[in-house]
Image: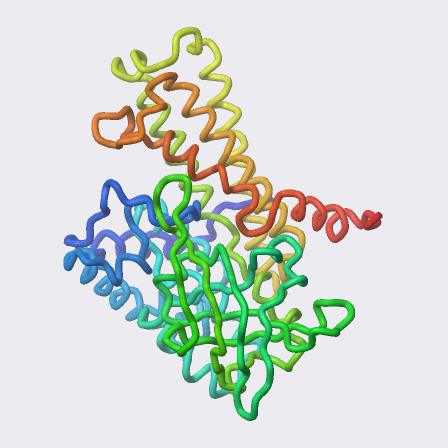
Length: 412
């Protein structure tokens, strides 16, 4: 496969670089101590959904100014049709845009609402739902979070028990969601609920709803993680009344809407660039006099081989991402390829974190960023990576998908 840019793509790449260089708000600077999210696509110190409501006026206004600048070009939702606030870019152009923003270490905007919910509404939403929700996402004015997982329905999502009972023009929703990424910073949620408790198989009794977080009976509670931060939340529904007009697709057919939504997951370019930059920083550091002092005694011999392996794996991940987006560009819908990407990226995340932490020996125990080698980057990465192999679907689930859908192996 030839991943070289065409002349038009090369010109677009230069356009993106110039745009970021000239238009990114100078006052919008990262917080050196901010963690905020476990997602590998996030730029350290920046997390746009958090920044837009920050108590720091400079960060808050910088985040909103950056959203407005991107919205002028339709680049918050670059692959969407122009009539809904997008730019009508091709899948490969969107890939280039995301790649160059990550290389420049500037945040993308509107996350899950832009790349996951928006395409779902374009495919399954009513005209009224599209008119109400798509433009605010494209302008960076409304953020979303995904309410799928539950305390006893994570990998077995079809076992969810949050219940919605029809009452006239509303559903009355009761139950609990958990591990909702940045749920405490969202304006709206898209939620899977059970509307037929007797359905068999279980996935046939599930409905897809859009829920305003300000709905009475909805309570969002942040969850503190291993790092002491709160990148996700749990959500409780107690007699929350949600209009039937907020149902996406048919009642009891929400599973199929949700599966389409998950097929819109990103190709994973953000993780690739983040790992690439981490390796480059590690190589630069250990090649310096200070870095050689930090290397664990006796580990110098193996450091080159370890880093070479990680770099090779990172290039494999890049090619997986390019293959996935190339399939989209050819009119296909990624299937098991998304699981290949998720699995390989998650396990590479952990291997890279261990490589960096081992290289620093006892210095890898320093948690505070100030005065720590590389500002404690690999210590923090190691904590981030703990959850990598079950975020977005456990590795066991991803392997099952690859085996059955990709390789055609029997389920038993």
